[in-house]
Image (cartoon, rainbow, N blue to C red; front, side):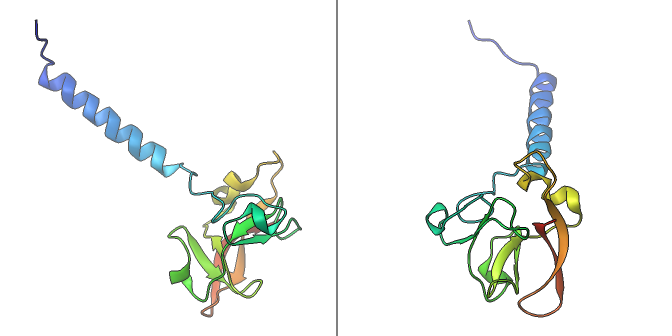
Length: 126
């Protein structure tokens, strides 16, 4: 026997799925990887480069070198630190909270010099 789902119930399921997908994407921090954002202590912890643990990089920070924003993932910008590295862009401290793995706030949204000139807000050590 074949069951049919009323159109209204079917649309409700689609609406919930779309709503949940949008909500999850808004707070999705799966973009942390060995390429950008993972904690590190040595170069081999990262795909390209490790900024070792310090006040500037709490827990260490995997990144990659850059000459401009086009060298960085969409969620990051190129700053004039360490010869040019990609860091996550932000609007305020809440945007950097996903990097705080110690349970203590260590990452803040800070203004740094952009590689191409000007200033950018990026996640950096407190």
